[in-house]
Image 1 (spheres, rainbow, N blue to C red):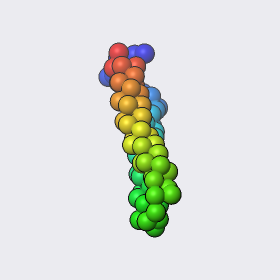
Image 2: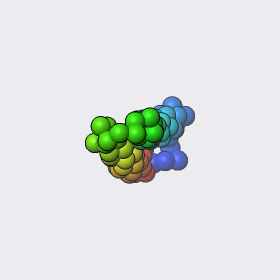
Image 3: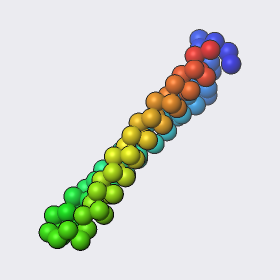
Length: 87
């Protein structure tokens, strides 16, 4: 890869698209995690019995895990992209 000052417009735009795609992926992970957590809270509010107790905790846990996976994935890919294009 040529040094950063020698990049042509097409390459610069490709880097920007890659960074934006990575951010978009992070946001979709966060959105999915929050949907799972909100669904768990909705089930908890509408069912006052202990019938859905484990379902609520499983959905909330999956939501939290999804958000954590999204953040870890974002940081990993961000590091990879910066390393690839900083040379």
